[in-house]
Image (tube, rainbow, N blue to C red):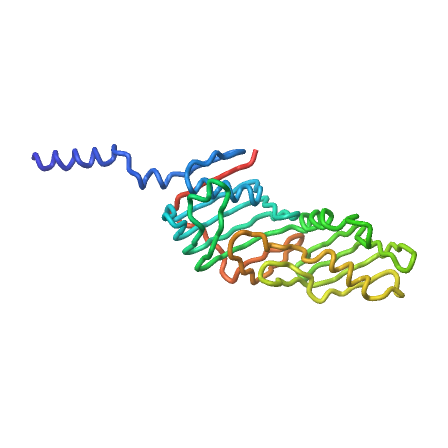
Length: 264
């Protein structure tokens, strides 16, 4: 009888006592801003500063060790800003990830040194591509430049139409340029036109003008400043959008420790 009472008492104390691993498994939510207190929260703040996302969810399998190594990281972001281009979504998962030492993270000094494997997927709309091109090309400088351009993404490829201002001899011409093209990934991080077919309304113009015009809008997407290893491989086109991904897609970490953020 005493043995049964003792066991029941132990079970009662077990469920009442604060358990560290249960506390770690809880979700941590932030809205509008974050005042980081822990190494992982400093890591979260770094990615918020880097990407200015509308939402972000960071999930880890366990806390990092003293060297900055994570066994497993998953991150899902929406409304991501990279340079002058907005991504609708950016999702990635990294296995056996080595960052620099956590004591540097509070100062915003975060560096992903290597990862055994990275799985990634990003989704971008033609609207965001066009907005980014407008920021990058329209009226920049006094030389030849695009006056306007609009791209459309279809399952079979990309169509574009715009007006390019070019100075030929002493005359500035408005040149209507139409483009039909496939898309390809270059250097595992850049989205480029592939074998574009170009039509212009002035047949007597030299080829270098259209070559220069296309060069100004490429790459359509540049992810070289994404601060982790990334090797994109595949493109899937839908009406109005494109999805770029690695060979294998990222999957969420089951039963991980999650940190979520939502902009106000």
